[in-house]
Length: 383
Image (cartoon, rainbow, N blue to C red; front, side):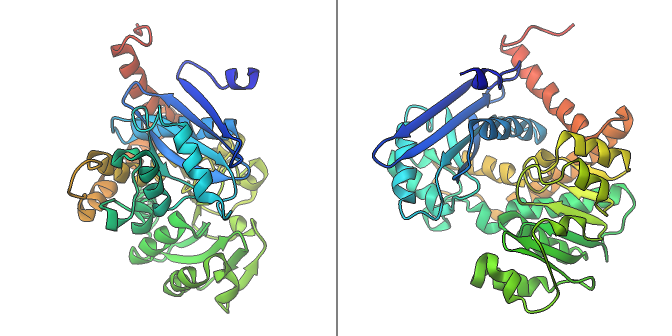
């Protein structure tokens, strides 16, 4: 238990609930980080490598993400230790949410993260017999399938445009590298092309693809639908890159939209970009952020850059028990407005404080969380 206690600080987590089921072999954890601004809300992931520490870190990101976009929910995250490709996926998922029936949906509402789909959100609702248990369900069930709509990736692209404007970099003709061509990366690529950027490299778990003259994003999107991660092999032209090499590909803009901690101190010292937009959660290490700041590379933190999904989730939370689904046009407009404004605010605050953008963004989020904790008597009033 000492490891769990080491995760706790003045902000949380408030609850760490570990569950298991001998029949299915299910093991999982729910971390509710901080509910001062509202009930716990965050994605649920499924991976063979899920750890309590990983889920706790991601729950803290959710606390900051909700506060950053100034929506009134609290940070939480859930993780299931299992292979999402397993034929037993549904049974494991049902066992997990059944074990958490006291927490879902009264203390935590399920969202989608790595390894889970809109259908899985529908399974959660079915298992618990409650439409309010999960968001991100299929359109046919009245849900807001924001992964399918590409809301998070759309927001990443809008943030990229806003950050480029802040540093005087024209997005028209700017070269972009996207690590990860999943739910976030592919939608970001689609929107960036609409905004005039040139996507020169993308990657999946199978490796990367590079063309200095620009990749055909429309063709990549088609191949993704047909071949999944194998699109790298199926594209038929360009230069193949070993996994991770795309991070060092020459471009004005780098968007890590895959896994956490992929940019460490060594990579940060070598990458060739003017802007790093954190499409994934926690893609840079603290040491890397200092290196990037020292090199004058602008970084938009994850809980600012990829907050489009939480804005959409906010709409979905309001509509959980409604007969009407949110209008997607309103969602996209709100995502663009909120994320662009947050980007400008954080970059300006970092410059004013002469600190990293992460430190500026965290300070803004913590101020909002601290105020709520003080008002509710959970923390002593500051002088």
